[in-house]
Image (cartoon, rainbow, N blue to C red; front, side, top):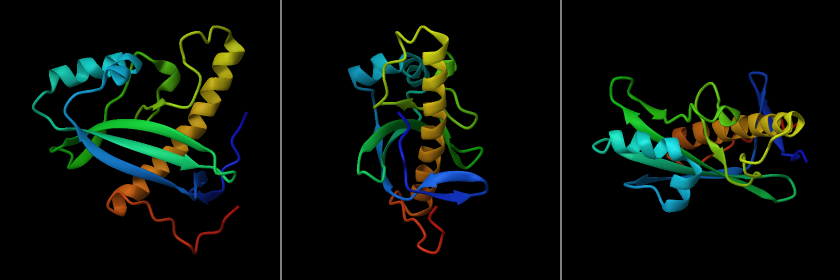
Length: 154
């Protein structure tokens, strides 16, 4: 079922008007995170000296239902920017900018038929766009998203 988020339109994309993002440094992944994101454990093992951060994004829809996302990233000194860690082996969750795992969705394992995978992929794309906006706003506002009041709500 599609969520009915209250959104703003920016550059042709729809972003949520409510939500929060909390960033914390993680030295190691919890066992549940390592199980959900096996390729991330490999990435972290190879980069022990590089600080890894986790951003938990919580989106609120207009019915006050929430969806949560964990985004893992590291600071790239050469680019002077945060670089999200992608899960290249899990294509259904793959995005052009970064990849995240959607915590509130049904588990990817077990989605066998094409139609189910297609629906899951569509729902995930929408969630990724929403979370991208939340994270961008959070970065600009010191990890406390502030949504401009002068942007038209549609």
